[in-house]
Each structure stands twice: as structure tokens, then as C-alpha cells.
Image (tube, rainbow, N blue to C red; front, side, top):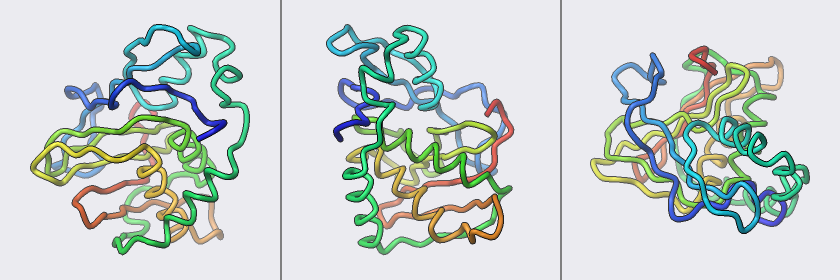
Length: 200
């Protein structure tokens, strides 16, 4: 990723103990919160921050007012997005559409953009039904859930962004502003896109 090197993460982003959310994305699922080890400026010491990608970027902007420029958040990376789009058609996953309260398409698109800009490998503790809200703004959330009985590590946050993009492509009809869905990957993890009114 050239211009969206938003967060330089040492090792993996870790999912830690239960956060102060009241509701899981699906009844019976567990909730965990991401901790991110990140640089606030190029070459600076890393700091550990907790929350969604939007909360982390906001905290980093407070620490470093030049954060967007320093890490290229203020630029588009069309080459990276084109590559990610081509990967979406190679999967044989299943999905369900509009089974939850719908989120605004524009806000989910923004969450996808943020997740594409995160480097590092997301890690989730054992499931099944172990979820973390990785993106949340304007009552629109992207959740990542591990249904394996062991800790799951993904190659990158772009995997979660790709899952949300598949749901947008399959579930958003273009006729309305809102959609929701759940994408199930063959290797027992899933992405949920939905409205979320719990501190989102």
C-alpha cells in the first residue's frame, strides 16, 4: 500500500478483553475490542491505542496534527483498491443480505476505505462467535467475527475491507441509502455490516 499507510503496526493488531459495548452484532456472540500498536509519526516510538479504526485515527490526529499528511491518509490509492477489487471475485463464500438494521452505504464505504489503509495482521481470539467492531462511524459498523475454536490471524485488514465490499456489491441495491449483511468465509470467519447505535 503506497498512500494509505495509515497505521504502521508492529506485529498484529490484537483483540483484547470485552469492551464497553452493550450489544453484540448477533445475539449470543461475544464482543472484544481491538488494541493497535502504532506510530503517531514516521519513525516515532509506537503507542498502544484501543478502539475502532476511526477512533485510532482520531487519537493519532490529536497526538500528531500532521498525521494525515505524514502517512498519506489524505491521498487515494487507486492501484491498491483495484487490486483488492480483483480479489473479490476469486472467493467462493456465502452471504446473507439485509438481515439486520441497515447502515448507510456512504458510511460503510468510508469504513472500507479506512480498513484498506491499515497495515498489520488482525488477530481474533477463539470462537465461535467471537467478534470485534473494527469500524464504526455515523451508526454504521463493520464487525469481524471468528467462528474457529482457535485464534484466527488474517493476512491483512484488507481482508475485512474486502468482505465488507462484497456485502456492499451484493446487498446494496443502489435504490436506497441503506443495506446490511453477513459474509461467511470458508475458513470460518465472517464479516458483518449493519447499523449500530451503540456508541457508534
